[in-house]
Image (cartoon, rainbow, N blue to C red; front, side, top):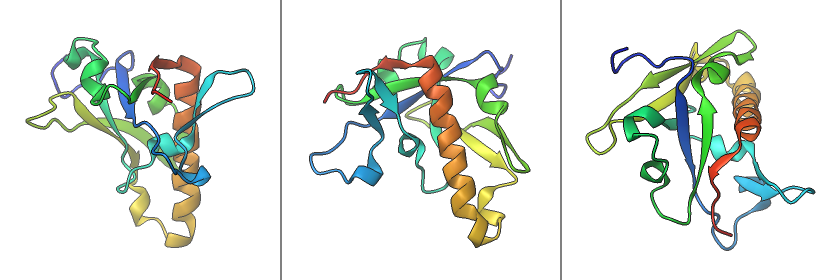
Length: 149
């Protein structure tokens, strides 16, 4: 496997920033559910470009602290194959390597075709479904590092 291939069994990490003091309820990225477990919410996958970033665990030597950044942030995990198995209307989902000088593990989760070319009246629903499905996958695998409260 070369650096451009992300296998379906590959583990991906996503940083979930700790909430600020006065966060609006609609912007919550996680919450404690009725059972006391920390639950990932769809806003954990919000991205201005609708391409949430993730890190390839194998390139970070399976060290989630390299994704975490500030020690108060959390890290969730996803399996590449689970992400690719999502279908949202006629869109398929993929993960593309997008390494930077600072972060060689950086990648993006993308919708094909890109959601930004869909008529604007349908974009909001597609984006929300995309984030909801990613949160479901993350909740199945659980947190690798929980954010501080």
